[in-house]
Image (tube, rainbow, N blue to C red; front, side, top):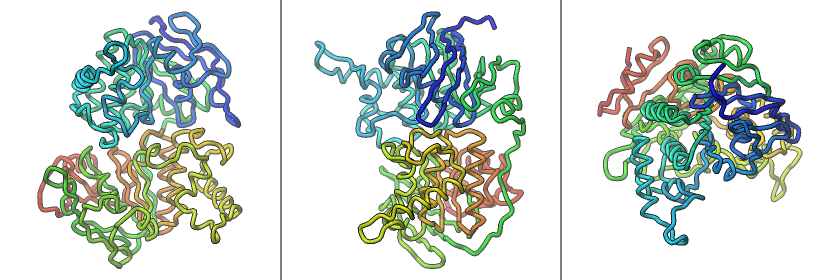
Length: 512
């Protein structure tokens, strides 16, 4: 391999208490190329990226930039050397505006003391126009959807001066198809400027499309490095997990029972007029996995949130096991038998300052109390059993939640919902940002509880995934239900066709 090396890591190891995250890893970053890093969750990808970005320091080994050994003491040190990172887990301040987030820590000033807000606004507009996403710079980040926040995260890194190396950790996990295309055009532009891209993704087609080199990690060790033009997807899968089976089918035979949930005329008005959800009606049976599919902005997340009582402005007739109920708050819905696994596990699913164990029982503490006393043994037994049942890879349940890989963090979020003993489990993009093996584990969990009679509603934007797991699929487009598919009707073509429609009756159609 003759391309110039920009960054090299030699013999890098990282040891956490009870965990060897990286073991003597060698890693090359080629100048002006897209250097893809792949591996299952827990393979050490994010740990290696944190070391290269100055967030973590290696336990042993050396990092060289342009042939010179460097010791990064923090992110500012890395930034001054031209290394930027777009985090997989969003690293924004929700109480601040888009512009304030983008220029946090590198503010423009007048006379050295006065913040130059006008310049921040102008530069933010330019960055977002470059990303073809005209979000107003003064918009609070808390008002943005996850996909929009990802765009802001990208813009924040692009605002860095003298960028030489850009680390992208799952940058497309929350983006729409159109937004992904914009990002790929930006990557091509940066590559043309000689900027080195380190790109982490679980979307194998992306790797083959934009990558120049691929480095494979498994269990914290280097498995191999190759030019993308010399490999194919089966090679990638085989390197990651030890075999090359790329067929995706998670459906299992299971009994489907009586109707457990019925939703009629769910309507959510949109600020400024119109509807985010327009008279949506559907039913769910015990043991059924009902998929909700739609493009970004279709209303799929809002549908879940309305069922959980998060939108008091919505109108809905809802029946649980034949009894009419009114969703007024998340807490009351949990008490009635609903559990919600949110799309953004870091911001909405986990408390990052708490331990693994404390996160697991956070929503079900009433099950482990007697009067004002916490029944520690009962809680501990329940946590231990759930860790075993859900196959959560944990060295010590009292470690911080952030010590786990993304896939295992997601299992903890699911366990938090499961421990409330729900009748209906609502999952919003449960496989976002996790690898092939972790996805299989999540869907194994979903099938397990469906087989026990739980009703499952699963929101997904990945066509192959929702086809591989759902018994029946309802398609949303612009807040309207544009189709319902089941059995052999469920195909990629039918889903794409229905998601591009927009009729106003609110009635479901079979698309064959």
